[in-house]
Length: 113
Image (tube, rainbow, N blue to C red; front, side, top):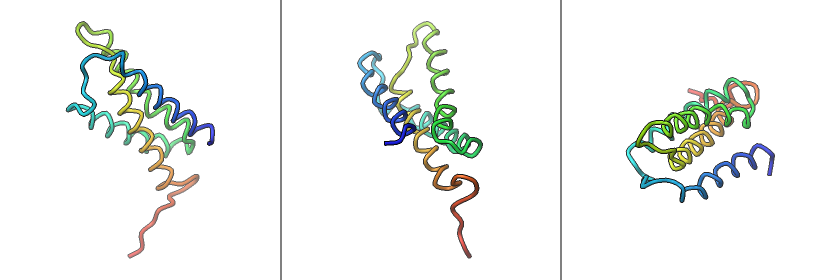
């Protein structure tokens, strides 16, 4: 397993294992698709700029981490590792999609008409 894959897998596993620390937050709540979608879009965008999966994953998940830290500072709100797990999954999917579509140096996927 490459270092970038190990980093991504360990981050995702850590988030999944830490869910016992969260409040009554559903895995399939209304905002989870938003967390996934935004992080996936950020993953593709970050990969298009860096062409490095580890850096792109870090950039793609950073806003989700920041959002949860800010949420944890608000009264009556908590840091949601479930939201962050969806962010991590979205970032992972987005970065991998970016790698498949963009490739290492240029657009790798082309359609012919």
